[in-house]
Image (tube, rainbow, N blue to C red; front, top):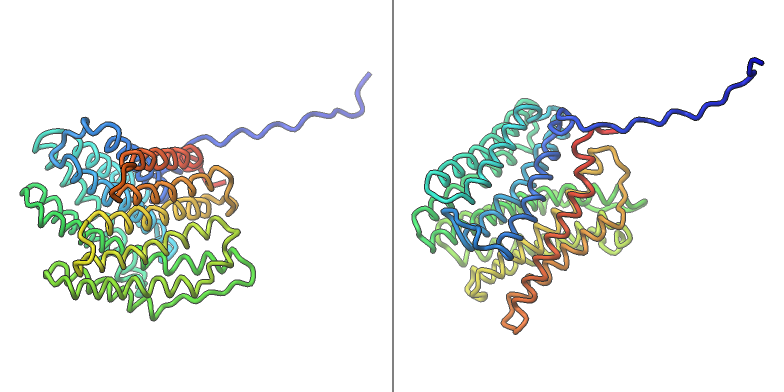
Length: 394
């Protein structure tokens, strides 16, 4: 008997396999993974296995360098290379060129860990090439498309690399006073880049995510803010601490005024937004702390570095590497419990790290708890996003 009708179960769609072409499609894919992975590894080494730090930098100098240039600046470069595609319609780096850039970054990380002056020289050269190539790639597409509002971005990336070169030279020379000045210069260059990016993307993200919410872009105040930041950098290099403090204070106050105008209460139910608001608030407060330090009111360098770096940059980063990754990967712009857990862990790590700066009997406990929360946050991020980053956009 011939069956009149045959019913078959629909074939299951085969899972999309990882592809090198997808992984090297845009700058955020390899550099977000590299930067976040290194954030976890480097802090674990610094806190739990400092005996493994046998490179030329060593100790707190290595930690400061790797946090600023190995982690924070790497995420910034990944974001800017990806944003450059949106700004100009041309992908600054992809495929083999992006692979070479990532390889330069990896060689630098290994070289700064390895003992000996030769390893240090190779690492320094690789890292400076990393920033130079990124700046040139961004500059090329921005100039070709005459994207005038972004003309300042490549020089800022180049300045970040130049501050790194000055820091490494001071470390090689053994001049601790100059070393700290160069670290401050790099920190402020990164702050200017962050202010530029955050002032653009936070209002844009907020207006799209919350129905009926309209927040100002603060273009004019943003120009004053960036001018104050660049002025502070120049005064720091010139050795004018009071003028530097004034520039930092202006930039920080403008950031906090902008934040209030962005109506933070309206985004309290949207984790992808409130994490960015928290980070921007901490960055503004950190610039005020840095101003107090420059004026001689805060004597410990650790306070501005950690308020700006851990509470500001890092909280913004965990928000940006989730929000922008979801958007560019074609995923729904919604958080899950794991992502919100990452946010909570990074905020907890920042709070505990600041508590560890206070002279209390719990300094070591706070430091270890901060490092544990930090490492767990970025490991969870990798667990969630690595499978998506190595596959084509659905």
